[in-house]
Structures are given as structure tokens and as C-alpha cells.
Length: 137
Image 1 (cartoon, rainbow, N blue to C red):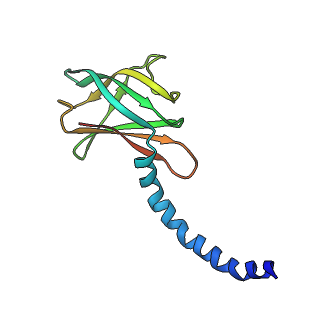
Image 2 (cartoon, rainbow, N blue to C red):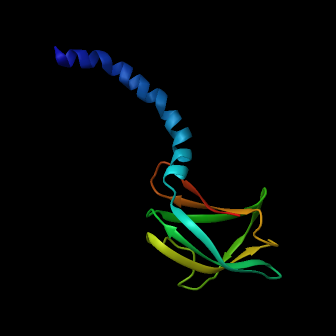
Image 3 (cartoon, one colour):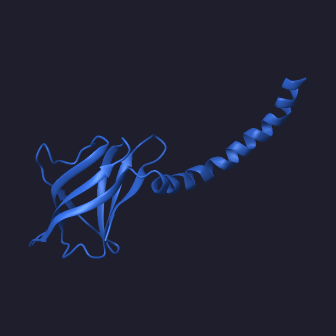
């Protein structure tokens, strides 16, 4: 008799699960980016303005083991290109968890870091791309 009661409830459970699936994909990335960021404690080191933009080193703590996809640097709505130093040790890559030091990076066509922010994109799982606020001036 107990198994028959479960069968009577199964359509309702399935319906509820299907109804909540869009909400999970709509709210899940937002919750993950705030509760479980990939990087933390970003510190800009040795920033200086060049003719091409702002050159800097950066230290940060990577707290999750996720695949690095890209970094976007913004000042207002304008996205600035980030040139990573193309050496084997400093090139953008997926880094292990822990304390990190990277650079020099050149943020093109940026006069100063004031009012700028950086967003990091990582693949942590197959459901969506994880977005982390990397830096906010």
C-alpha cells in the first residue's frame, strides 16, 4: 500500500521539479557568484600609467578549482582589452587554488584604475559559466 501512495504523489513531485528548473537556472548563477566566488582578496600592485593604458601586477586568492575562461575590465559600460604578459609563467591559464601573483598586465586605453572593475569568467561545472567580481575600484 505504501508504494501506491508514492505513485499517487509522483506526478505532483515531477511537476514541482519541472516548474522549479527554470528558476534554478535563473537564480543559480547569481547565488553562486556571491556565495561561492572563484577568486577573493584581489590587490593591485605597482600600477602605473603608460602611453597604451595602465600596467599592473595583481595578487589574489583562488578559492575554487575552476577552469579560467577570460577576464573583462570595465570603466563604466566600456570594456577595455587586457593584455597578459605572454611568458610561460605569466600567461593566462587555469591556476591551482591558493595565493596567486600575476602580471604584468596591460589594460589598454585606460587612464587610471579609478572607477573601474574587473569580472572573471570560469567554468566550474557544466551548468553555466561562473562570473566573479575580480576587482572593483
